[in-house]
Length: 151
Image (cartoon, rainbow, N blue to C red; front, side, top):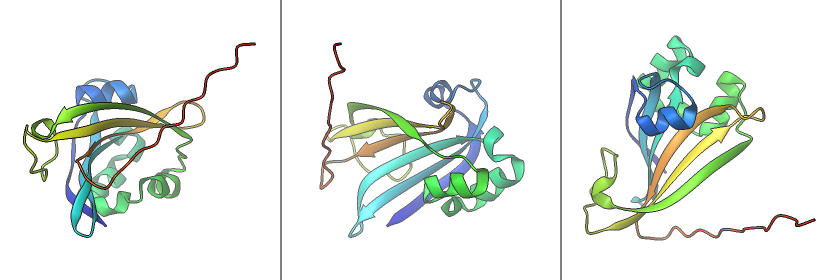
């Protein structure tokens, strides 16, 4: 299940503005949500979408009702005609106390996996940025790496 913990139109964080290629302080639609399994949070997420992409009316509507943005890929395709063709993701550990999510109860005694993702269109245009935190629990990841051809 998805639980929304808030949404706002706010200046982009430094990380989001850099990932999205927008000016520092440019407005984004920022939503905080949790994905749960059997009522237990398995992912905390803060997603930013530039207001410039949404336009003022849709930005205001999604700030009032952030559930409109879920699922994210379908929302972007249906409302904006934008397809997320690929994502760039970085992974790093952090402590629960560093999580920038309003509903996260974790403290600095809990290690979590932080994943920053930026979604791009086919023409390499960044259209959304998410910071995800995975607390200890049922989520597992497998990464396949391929060595480039050496011809």
